[in-house]
Image (cartoon, rainbow, N blue to C red):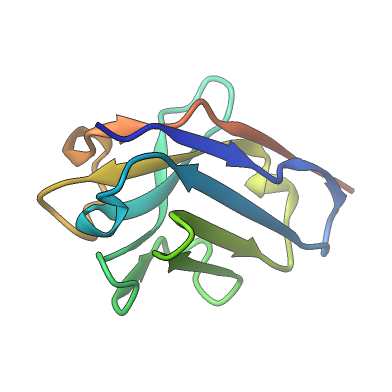
Length: 124
């Protein structure tokens, strides 16, 4: 069982940066592949970024490639999402997710645990 708690969201101007954190409970964090998804009102939850168990492999949605960076610190049971050059279209609730079996999946159906989300709002 893994419990995930996101933090770091907030209001930022277009072009600005935010760093999201996701703290995981449990002693088996390094056995889970991790990902970030986001969901804007009226939209489906969409894939943002993922990393494998070590953080050595990463995957990104085309819309964030080159602007966002996913990383993890297994010693601290934390996964991060560094978001630079934020755009108004990045406004959404951001969720971290953990998968036991599959790394890099873009489908939310392949993730076993979810956090409660943190809101990111980008203003013009």
